[in-house]
Length: 305
Image 1 (spheres, rainbow, N blue to C red):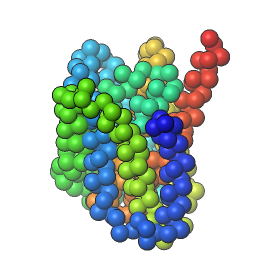
Image 2: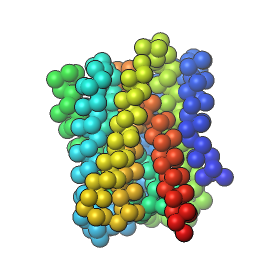
Image 3: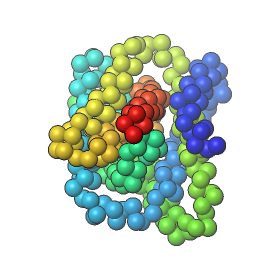
Image 4: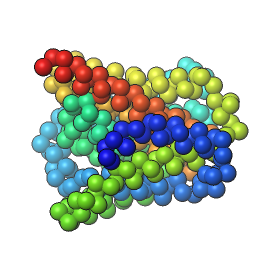
């Protein structure tokens, strides 16, 4: 039941975003909830991990380092290049670059499962990218944005520690120590995380109702292209090095899918509400595109067997 509900995430997100657009007063006063909600999402991610997942880094360090390298090599550069080519405003450029500088998204693990990729590798890559984000996200944000908007590097770093790292570590510790006792509770966290992300998207839409009409097709196209090129390069670059097909799929999903909730939280805290829009759009779109990609891979595998 929970898996079916989470698969419908894009539909729920679109539905509640539409409600927020029509009736912004329902969500507009909950701006201060964005960071706590994201912390709940990251705690939920931690509740899917154990300390053994971090030991896995040392079992296949080459693949992990390669995956993290591609995550932070491809997406920040692509995001900046696309924003420049499309001539996005400073606020929207900050938003899409923040998306590109964020670590992989938590939904990537589900998409890897649906697409017959390597789920264990996906979990390890997501957690490793998340830890790397403490330095990598503010560093790349500063690199690409400091000449356009002020970028508070240290403040962003401490925010990521607070919003991402600490909740993940707490969740991991609880799951590692009490795993057998909290199995049933742990199963609820995917749906709790989905609800939290949907509420975040709804708040962003409500806050930006008057500005949404000014977000043209170029912004949406920039989001779609960033996500699509992330999949393509994340898949085909490992292919060049003759990695196994499951590994290529996993890295492709990991690179293409971003923790857009983090980009939204950072945008609201350090830039502007308009800078949060690319992250909200990306959050909806990446789940649609990843579902289609995973479905295609599974369909292809079934036809071969």
